[in-house]
Structure formats: structure tokens, C-alpha cells
Length: 394
Image 1 (cartoon, helix red, strand yellow):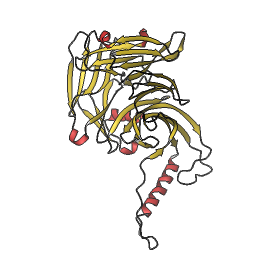
Image 2: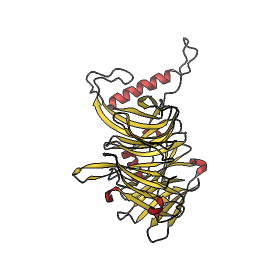
Image 3: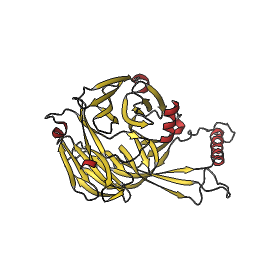
Image 4: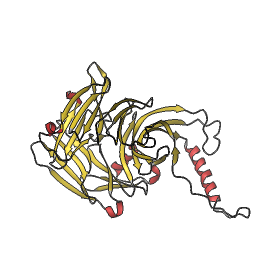
């Protein structure tokens, strides 16, 4: 069952989640300690938009919305009352939708089943929310991650800026023109063959004159392929490519083993990945090395949290939360020193001997505070109860 956390009150006594029980409805559930669950439903047109395949909850200026990725390549944005935006991304099925923040540069990242990704500037998305107008497909930057046979999940791995001495945009630029800035976004993708890869995506920023000149040359070149000439009988040429291919910057191989999920925090340079054999790997994304392996955590779910350093208020301490559903166990590990600082069973967390279907949900993304969260929410979607683990209380 797809589920995502939409809101949590400061006292941690009330939450709102969004989930998909069937393909034709988006369900909003409000859970509050001491009160019965309250539910509302919004219709989802499966025939036109496709089945929901991914959920992402975002808060912007006191408005909470849920972004739904579909099997037909749409991004549908819902409030608790209605569908407000429909963005056309591709005709491929969406595997996951994530909100990433590369050192203050937020973006929405969409992963498709065939390893294609699409980036969407979060600032542009927030403008669309405010104006209730959908951007066209050209607003998405599409890239094909070409070094893995299969990609199941993706997250951020860092960002840096540099200046190029010389750059060509389908031709030479004038010597008097200023070299464009180069923005490098690093991503970490998990899957199979190889199991973990980091990719470097370069976004070049050009002047308006350079862009117009490059587009004009591309249009002229493509249009000329449709003009018959007496020298060339076969004038068919492929249409302009809508995405670029990116090879891995760093690879981590381990036979035919497959990883299914990854979470990361770029400012710490750390990522946690879970595989199909019950292992959790802690990866240094800056150096591309494995720092630690936990075993015996089948179907694990992970989340990286942070709290202020008690010895230095300007620094934060990262923690890794590992939820092992088959063992009904939640563990919190301090990533700086490596020791386990907290462990609790799901039965103790919920006060129930037989919790039914528990999921670990990250707090919603808040556009006004893009910091690493300090807590994580556990929700039993059957009994409609919840519990919260906050590293600030450890």
C-alpha cells in the first residue's frame, strides 16, 4: 500500500497521512491521540491518468498537497478537496517521486521504470501551486542513467559549482561571451548490475543569446532533413533526442545482488541502501566507499535523521533509523560513532501485541524549512494508530 505523511503537529499528538487503498481514490486520514480516525477521499481518474505508483507530500505556505506519480507518466497534485494540477512528464510508468535539496537548490526528481529520470525545479513547482497552472513537459530536464541494468531507487549525493574555460553549444561561442557556469548534481542510484552507482549530472547555464542561437541551429539542422535534395535519396533522420545519457561516476559491485531502496543526506555525505538479502549498507557518497554493513534486516526501511550537537550548537549529528518489519524492531544508530543508541519493538511503540501493517514514513517536506528531520513516523494502516521516534529525545 502506498502511503506518505502529510502533516504532523508540533506536539506529535496528531498526524495526517495520505494513502492509496485502491486505484480510483486518494485517501486522506487524520489520526489524533484519544480520537477516532477521520477520513476523506478524492477521486482519481485511473482510466485517463493511470494507476497511482508513487506518493510525495509537500507543504508550501500553509498548504499541504500530495504529488501522485502514475503508471502513464503523469504527476497529479491533490489537496484534501480536489485535483489541482496535472503535469505531463512522460509516457512511461513512474517508479518514485522524491524531493531533493542539493545544498539549497531544491528539486523534484522523478524516476521511471527504465532508468530514465526527470528533474523539476522545486521553485517552479511552488509557482505552479500558487498560480494553479501546470508547466509543460519542457520544464523537466530528462536524463537516462545508462550504467545499470536495473534501477529501483535514487537519491541525492551532493552538488558543486565550477566554471568552464570554454564550452561549445552545438558550435563555437564568441570569445567575448562569458563562459557559462557548470552546476554538477550527484545522484546515487541502487538496483542491479551494478548494485550501487553514483552519477554526475551537469546543468549548464547559458545566456539568452546563446540559447536562441543554439536552438536556431538545431531547428535548421532538423528541418533540413525533411527537404528533398537530388544528392540524398534517403533523407530520414531521427527526431531530436529529448534526454541525455549519463554514465556512472562511481560503481559498487557485488555479483548479482540487488538493492531495492536508498535514502541519503547530501550535507553529511552519507547514504543507506537496503538489498534483497537483508543487508543495510552505509555508503560515503563523496568517496564512493562502503563504511558499514548491517545484516539480518530483511525488508528493511531506513531513514536518516539529525539533531543539534549538544557540544556545538552550529553542528548537527546524523542518525540512522532502521526498521526491520520481520523482527518487529526499530533501531537508531549514531552515524558519527557507530553505536546503537536506541531500540524498541513495534509492540512497545504501539502498545499492541499484534500490529498489523506498519510503515515508516518520513515527515512531510516543508518548503520553508529544508532541514534534515529529527523524527520519523510509524503508522499502522489497519488499526489506524501511530507512533513517533524522535532523536532529540534520545
